[in-house]
Amino acid sequence: MNSIVNKGEKTAQKQYITMLLGCFILKNIGDKQKGPTLELQERGIKLFRQVLLQV
Image (cartoon, rainbow, N blue to C red):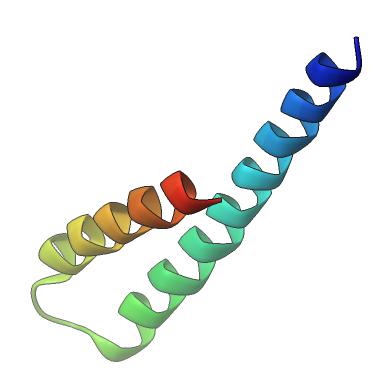
């Protein structure tokens, strides 16, 4: 039972971190970039995935 709770907490932490990073990256892209935003968003998404795998 304990391991299930721990997995749930870990998943929730990952989702929360992803959400914060997503908001931060998308806000920065929106603020600074008026050009190739799609490319930057894709790079941001790749960066997320790398960070999530490390959490």
